[in-house]
Length: 287
Length: 237
Image 1 (cartoon, one colour):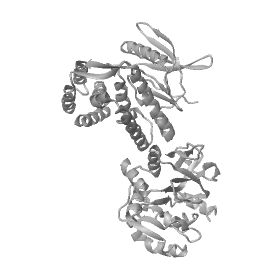
Image 2 (cartoon, chains in turn purple, blue):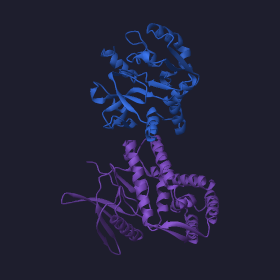
Image 3 (tube, rainbow over the protein chains, first blue to last red):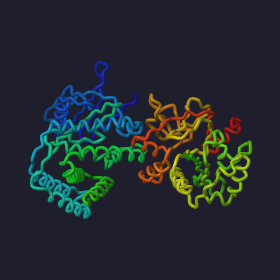
Image 4 (tube, chains in turn red, purple):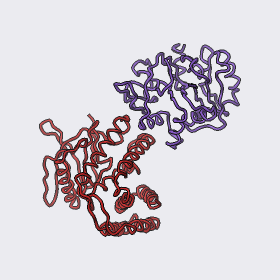
């Protein structure tokens, strides 16, 4: 049996066997990551309490945390990554996947409350990202990025002083790479605290992959890129059509997507990724 | 309803710069391999049969003349004709689109690969000709595209070079609407690396149904080596 598990930077992932059962142990001794992983796990535990029609959340069995380390024991899921799943899935599974994701987000919307927020929160976040991009040695002196930042600022300045969006529930990092695919069961992992807990964030994050194929950049293996593009475009068209029922999505998706890619840019340190981000942001600010 | 047959033979490979593509070779019965590839079909159902070739292959080897003699031998004179493309294409779908546009085809059509042979009952609709992998004596499973079929006998998936089921595409694809094919090709907007399977997969995602046609007597001469093997083993009819 071949089991492939990859962790993101900052934490280790081990598969352990106890009483013939497999478990995942996710851990970190990185001080910067301990609290982040703890918060992620707490968010996952909260999400686990909810009932979703198509989406599942791996069960958290135990959290061991002190000042020096954290260890989280969770359910092991037999699954495929998104590339392996999409490569071998027919149209009927793709339709099921689209339904599952949209139902999940609509359930989030139902649990959230349409709230008025002061856009200084968004503008402050933008200023914070701008500062970090300037401090990043890989992006700080890039004239092109600086120009994109100035163009992006226009989008944020155009926001009204207050905006109305649903606040209450979101995964926070709903990308293909944070979904485990097990036939027609989709398990969400790696929940993330967001600066605004809104389903709009999840709409933005999932379209980061369906529209901009972000997660494929992280995939080292070979795959049929054209098939992936066809598939992503189909999912994206459907999601965008469904999401567009909401006025707040139509009004603010674009600005929040710019913010999303700028947030990635602040930590970017590889030139191919920086080039990709410049291209995407450049296209977004033109709209 | 009109029904046309297209046989694309416009692959431009490096090795063809000074040798004739082997699909224009004669089989042991004196029939060109590319013509042999369609002789298992009931050709009466087609209004016209088009063989699409490249000018750069036609000119040095007098293929036009060769085809005319072959059409005469196979009673296809008047029904079959050549489409000669001035420039090589980058993919089989591009060759098909150019053939459809050149011949002003708008209705149903079948694409038959020139490197395989089978018999089967072909009809108008959206179909993929399939054959079970386990029924082959010799097979290179990696150079084929595969389909999955649901309980209602609909194609649910098609993919290049990944064995997702025992049913592989035998080299025959039937489309009921040429305009829909062209539209899908243009929508995908990618010239290199595109296969018919990509176009069909995109159509499947857009709720256009395809069904399988299970064919018989499948022979594969996908490479010159395959053909030489078939010939030496006297399997080829």
